[in-house]
Length: 357
Ligand code: APR
Ligand code: ZN
Image (cartoon, rainbow, N blue to C red; front, side, top):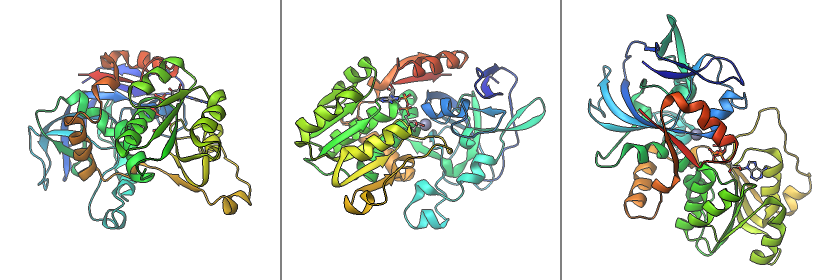
């Protein structure tokens, strides 16, 4: 089958048509992909920000139809429509039992178990997924059933960017109605965070991006103000009388904007870091300010979501017209064009490119 494979860091993905699948193990499901979003984290795997190893079949934001299930699978059957979750929710580990399924302990096992075969060798998919392929195998715990009337291109976005961004706003930050929010970065994740803040009832939502077209889009999705980074201080003064925002959501993954998002919140406010930066890059805080300003600095992994309940929650918001997913799809492409989609994302030209199989 066809798949886009990372064979060398900082090189174009190799589009191969001879990729195979390994054996379907106990508890695994075999999925025919229908659609996959192209997320910045795939680009981050390509440039080494997120270590994936090589070779690796990229893609982790997908939706498709179950072809067959392995022994012991009870929740899914052939023909079911599913969202691929890049973190499993095993419902048995300590994290899942404490209600923190987004931190499921079986994530590492999923990420390191190869399900693809290339040139006779076992090959992993990125985060254990690999949605830039026509078919894939994942553990049952990482496939979440959805109703069959929902178009799968819409559904695929839920698999990463939308859950990550909306979840950061409504779960991690837990934005209260009538508050002020600033969102750094207006890609697929940032636009989702803006929508989450809107859904949560924020009074003011200030979008920050360096690309003009992104700022225009941000307004369409609910930002009340949209500014370039150099104009943020002015917006902060106008919206919060200079006090600082109640919440900030950093959706870029850059040390400078992480620091800026911490600075943008008021004393006692909450800064949520959604973007994924490099393991070697550091962010500095003074030893005094952490105590004195009593700000909450929170990481947000997969929108602090429980995929078993939150995917459905998000799709119900979409059904009622409260979450715009159609509008987030900038381009529909074939998997052969994924390298162009990466370049368009780097140039700030798209919110999401979606691969159709
Ligand atoms: N200041 C302002 N905006 C910036 C800056 C900056 N220094 N650097 C990048 N941006 C903007 C880009 O113009 C773009 O609109 O941030 C946005 C990032 O969007 P995408 O590249 O589409 O990335 P996305 O898929 O939204 O992911 C964002 O979240 O999950 C993580 O790994 C992911 O770190 C990535 C982040
Ligand atoms: Zn992603």
